[in-house]
Amino acid sequence: MGYANATIANAEDYQRVLSTPRPVFLLFVSSHCAACSNAVPLFKRIAGEHPEAVSLVLDCAETPKHPEVTGTPTLLVYLNGLMAEKARGFGPEPEQAQFVEGLFKRYAPH
Image (cartoon, rainbow, N blue to C red; front, side):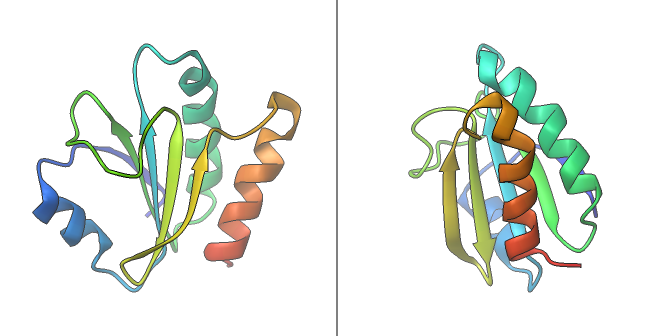
């Protein structure tokens, strides 16, 4: 699948997205977040290398509040509909690519 910019309208949409045997990566961002401007292209590049995963970029202004998202960028990883990991930010800039690649390798190995 790679990645997709997406809009989640309600809790049922969340459940629909999560009801897959494939790993699901949800990156929550906001337009006024400086860190998001770096996180989004990095996430999209790495997600594009993992078509076996469902990877979505969700703008918090267009998506219902998720109880695990208290700031942006936040990446939630789900396996079999259950949250497996939460990352608030990707860490120091020089280590961000390695951090995100590590998450994909751990949860969506080729």
